[in-house]
Every structure is written in structure tokens, then in C-alpha cells.
Length: 171
Image 1 (cartoon, helix red, strand yellow):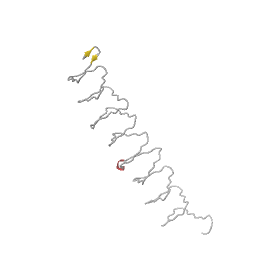
Image 2 (tube, rainbow, N blue to C red):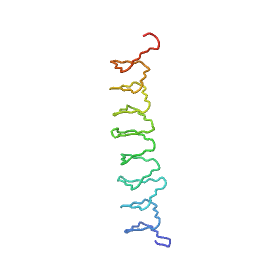
Image 3 (cartoon, helix red, strand yellow):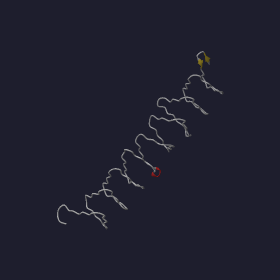
Image 4 (cartoon, rainbow, N blue to C red):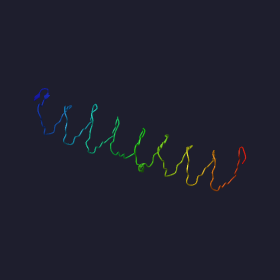
């Protein structure tokens, strides 16, 4: 029924050709689209409503900004550099794929065994609060101070002066 105020349709209707709406379109129920849908401007989903994409692939041509938490319930591949500005918590990882981790101005805390398959360089002091086993030679550049007993189970080669002293007592 067409009136001076617009068109009112009281029953089902079918439009079989191109339809153009020059102003806002309000749909009071569900909207089902059977073909390709193209939006040539922004799409806003208001309030706490969800935007759900089916099981097919989705492609974004620009940047994706998420203001709340994001959850990925399957694999995530990053083709480029991953920059994390906050903390990183890994609950499970495959160490075959961790090739180069650099920590700057942070503590490295290892809660299980640590295996270094290359060289280790320590710029400042290092403390070991229990036994240290070295397989191979140990070289010390500088003064070595022992505060406990020295137990040498083989020969000693001393290239310079050897001074032995005992503070008190016989021996």
C-alpha cells in the first residue's frame, strides 16, 4: 500500500530485480543473504552482539585492532616479526622451533633442567649454589680464591712461584 508517507507491505514480498535504498535500511528481524555481499563503508556491530564468521576462510585487507581479549583456538601463524610489549606465558612449547630468544634487562628463570648446546658467556658475577661439574679443562684468568679444602687427585704443574703457609698450628 503506497501512501504519501511511504510504502507499507503487510504480507510477504519478493523483489526480483536490483533494489536501491537511498537512505537508512532498518531490518526488524533476521537478514539472510544468499549471495556475495559487499559493504562499501564501515560495518558497526553495537552493544554486546557477536560477529560470527562460518567455517570458511576470512581475509582482512587492513589492520585488525582488538580492544578486548583475543582467543585463538587453533594454530596461529605469524608471517613476519612478532612483537610482544607485555609478558609472555608459554604453557606448552616445542623446543625444536625456539631458535633465538634474546632477553634484555630481565631475569631468566628456568624451573627445570637447562641444557646449553653451545658456549655460555657471563659478563658479570655468576653464582652456583651447589656442586659444579666440568668435563674437560677449566681455565681461570685472574686470581682464584678457595675458601675450602683443595683436593687434587693428580699431578700439579705450577709454572711460577708456589707459596705454602699456615696461619697457626703444626704441619
